[in-house]
Length: 213
Image (tube, rainbow, N blue to C red; front, side, top):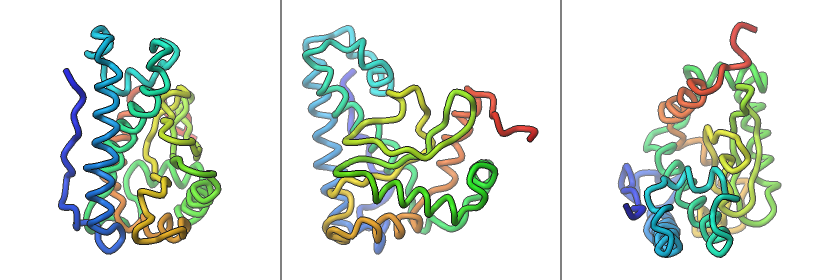
């Protein structure tokens, strides 16, 4: 089964003015499309790996043949990261978090504003291209981390609850070099329902360390 580019769950212009239609088109069709194409090409001579999901491939990169490991890391990671990214945004999104994610943020970071500040700061400080994440640990706790390039927390044994893309191709047409402005605006399109679904998946596999405290 060849890996496929997932369709955007909304129109290219649906996240305006936060993310412009031209950026969405280039980012989804060209950048994400290329990761899928390159991943499929790398797996061509390894039929035994073709049935694995992109998440399975990047979970244990040491198990990937050395000649395609870097390609799978970059393109498999790019595929997993972007498949999440499109879903955790929506038109008329944003606002304060609600439900389980609001509880986790409050317990771990004190309040949403402090969490946002720390998350944005980690995104600003990620040198070059990369991602900033809220990632779940095996203990059930959560932490903010950043990763270079298309690396995903899965490869570190963590669970990506949600992340924001700080590659220049994610924001440059509208924000130019003003990454902090993009990071601040991005909260206006966040899809908290989808993030709560991802948190639920994480919590169903890890006993929340925060429960009952």
